[in-house]
Image 1 (tube, rainbow, N blue to C red):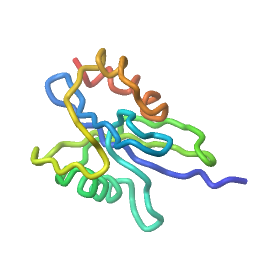
Image 2: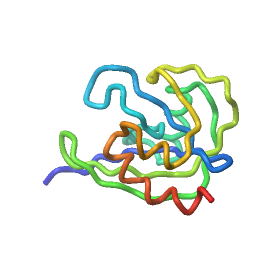
Image 3: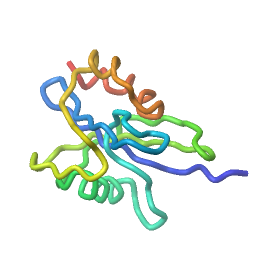
Image 4: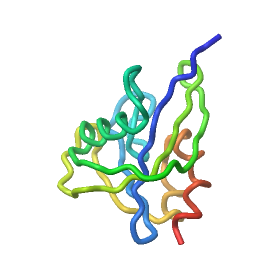
Length: 130
Protein backbone atom coordinates (compact mmCIF):
# COMPACT_ATOMS: atom_id res chain seq x y z
CA UNK A 1 0.00 0.00 0.00
CA UNK A 2 1.33 3.42 -1.00
CA UNK A 3 1.78 6.09 1.63
CA UNK A 4 -0.20 9.21 0.75
CA UNK A 5 2.17 12.16 0.40
CA UNK A 6 0.98 15.38 2.00
CA UNK A 7 1.37 18.86 0.56
CA UNK A 8 -0.01 22.25 1.51
CA UNK A 9 -1.14 25.29 -0.45
CA UNK A 10 -1.41 28.76 1.04
CA UNK A 11 -4.08 30.92 -0.55
CA UNK A 12 -3.95 34.65 0.13
CA UNK A 13 -7.17 36.49 -0.70
CA UNK A 14 -7.56 40.26 -0.80
CA UNK A 15 -10.29 42.40 -2.34
CA UNK A 16 -11.80 39.46 -4.23
CA UNK A 17 -8.51 38.32 -5.73
CA UNK A 18 -6.13 35.44 -4.96
CA UNK A 19 -2.35 35.57 -4.87
CA UNK A 20 -0.90 33.20 -7.47
CA UNK A 21 2.60 32.49 -8.76
CA UNK A 22 4.00 30.89 -11.91
CA UNK A 23 6.58 28.14 -11.48
CA UNK A 24 9.98 28.29 -13.14
CA UNK A 25 10.46 26.16 -16.29
CA UNK A 26 11.34 22.48 -15.88
CA UNK A 27 9.81 19.43 -14.29
CA UNK A 28 6.24 18.19 -14.43
CA UNK A 29 4.83 21.49 -13.11
CA UNK A 30 7.18 23.85 -14.94
CA UNK A 31 5.58 27.16 -15.97
CA UNK A 32 2.24 26.25 -14.41
CA UNK A 33 0.42 28.65 -12.11
CA UNK A 34 -0.14 27.62 -8.51
CA UNK A 35 -1.08 28.66 -5.04
CA UNK A 36 2.32 28.68 -3.32
CA UNK A 37 3.14 25.87 -0.95
CA UNK A 38 4.77 22.48 -1.12
CA UNK A 39 5.62 19.21 0.50
CA UNK A 40 5.09 18.68 4.23
CA UNK A 41 8.29 17.20 5.68
CA UNK A 42 8.01 14.33 8.22
CA UNK A 43 8.80 16.58 11.20
CA UNK A 44 6.42 19.39 10.16
CA UNK A 45 2.81 20.34 10.67
CA UNK A 46 0.85 21.84 7.78
CA UNK A 47 1.34 25.25 9.37
CA UNK A 48 5.13 24.99 9.76
CA UNK A 49 5.42 23.69 6.19
CA UNK A 50 3.48 26.71 4.87
CA UNK A 51 5.60 29.14 6.87
CA UNK A 52 8.79 27.51 5.52
CA UNK A 53 7.57 27.26 1.92
CA UNK A 54 6.51 30.93 1.71
CA UNK A 55 9.85 31.98 3.19
CA UNK A 56 11.88 29.75 0.85
CA UNK A 57 9.89 30.37 -2.33
CA UNK A 58 8.85 34.01 -1.94
CA UNK A 59 10.92 35.45 0.91
CA UNK A 60 7.89 36.74 2.81
CA UNK A 61 6.42 35.89 6.19
CA UNK A 62 2.78 34.88 6.47
CA UNK A 63 0.19 34.18 9.10
CA UNK A 64 -2.10 31.20 8.66
CA UNK A 65 -5.86 31.32 8.73
CA UNK A 66 -8.56 28.67 8.43
CA UNK A 67 -8.46 25.42 6.48
CA UNK A 68 -10.20 25.86 3.11
CA UNK A 69 -10.30 22.39 1.55
CA UNK A 70 -8.30 19.54 0.07
CA UNK A 71 -7.65 17.77 -3.21
CA UNK A 72 -6.29 14.37 -4.13
CA UNK A 73 -4.07 13.62 -7.11
CA UNK A 74 -1.56 11.11 -8.45
CA UNK A 75 2.08 11.98 -9.08
CA UNK A 76 4.56 9.20 -8.44
CA UNK A 77 1.99 7.78 -6.03
CA UNK A 78 -1.02 9.18 -4.18
CA UNK A 79 -0.92 12.78 -2.89
CA UNK A 80 -3.22 15.12 -1.02
CA UNK A 81 -3.02 18.90 -0.93
CA UNK A 82 -4.47 20.72 2.06
CA UNK A 83 -5.30 24.37 1.38
CA UNK A 84 -5.27 27.10 4.03
CA UNK A 85 -6.03 30.75 3.87
CA UNK A 86 -2.89 32.75 4.48
CA UNK A 87 -2.21 36.43 5.09
CA UNK A 88 0.90 38.02 3.61
CA UNK A 89 2.95 40.07 6.04
CA UNK A 90 5.01 41.72 3.35
CA UNK A 91 5.16 42.33 -0.38
CA UNK A 92 8.91 42.49 -1.04
CA UNK A 93 8.96 39.17 -2.90
CA UNK A 94 12.21 37.39 -3.68
CA UNK A 95 11.19 34.76 -6.22
CA UNK A 96 13.16 31.51 -5.89
CA UNK A 97 10.87 28.93 -7.55
CA UNK A 98 8.66 31.26 -9.58
CA UNK A 99 9.10 33.64 -12.53
CA UNK A 100 6.14 35.90 -11.75
CA UNK A 101 3.27 36.52 -9.37
CA UNK A 102 0.00 38.41 -9.45
CA UNK A 103 -3.36 38.95 -7.81
CA UNK A 104 -6.13 37.44 -9.94
CA UNK A 105 -9.89 37.04 -9.73
CA UNK A 106 -11.38 33.56 -9.98
CA UNK A 107 -12.58 34.12 -13.55
CA UNK A 108 -8.99 34.85 -14.65
CA UNK A 109 -7.57 32.00 -12.56
CA UNK A 110 -9.88 29.55 -14.33
CA UNK A 111 -8.34 30.55 -17.70
CA UNK A 112 -4.70 30.04 -16.63
CA UNK A 113 -2.61 26.88 -16.89
CA UNK A 114 -2.81 25.67 -13.29
CA UNK A 115 -1.48 22.48 -11.79
CA UNK A 116 -4.35 19.96 -11.66
CA UNK A 117 -3.98 19.58 -7.87
CA UNK A 118 -4.55 23.33 -7.42
CA UNK A 119 -7.34 23.42 -10.04
CA UNK A 120 -9.28 21.01 -7.82
CA UNK A 121 -9.16 23.65 -5.05
CA UNK A 122 -11.07 26.26 -7.10
CA UNK A 123 -14.51 25.33 -5.69
CA UNK A 124 -13.27 26.11 -2.16
CA UNK A 125 -12.38 29.67 -3.19
CA UNK A 126 -15.79 30.83 -4.37
CA UNK A 127 -17.29 31.42 -0.89
CA UNK A 128 -14.32 33.66 0.00
CA UNK A 129 -14.32 35.82 -3.12
CA UNK A 130 -17.51 37.85 -2.70
